[in-house]
Length: 242
Image 1 (cartoon, one colour):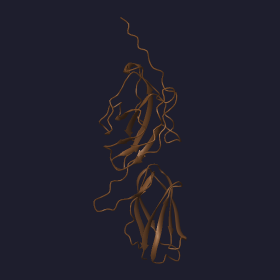
Image 2: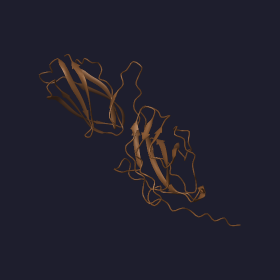
Image 3: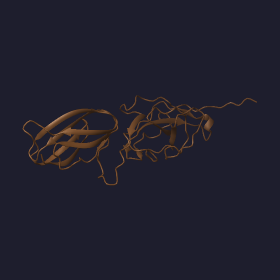
């Protein structure tokens, strides 16, 4: 007896999603493109792997998914399926702090309820490219019990400056999803920039030390420290007492 399996047509377009929102143990994957049988597929799976490209799914297979990282099906190399659905948002838990994760979304079509007919679109666009179905994200640094919560925007966060008041050097941790150039600026109480420094940082947690020794020095008083990555910025107030 010959068994013939008729496969569904694979989706033709990748499923895009917006940049994710990380915490120290969770990631919110939001604004996943809507399901469409002709283009992105009737459904999709989300696969996450630590610090590396996830292993692709194989046609003809339906994989158990769990939103707790490590609890869903492992496609190989600790590539865990965290979602199998056509919903457009998911919160993934069970992650480690200050850790890079790679997220891939694969659309698929299936004939009726027959998993043997599943066809995936396994084409991944370049990592972190515009409108991509493949992104990396770094979870935030876990804050110590005696430490204030960091300030954050979508793509990076900054711990509070220590010590504050500052006498000679500003110390803080910059945690960013992607490496690149950051600018650190100081503004006085009337909004004048009195200090600016560019620095190349790596993805993840970076310990930043900024000496404030300048020609002529800085007057004692309140200043605004601005951390900029070219798209977003974070401000925090510091007090300088040379």
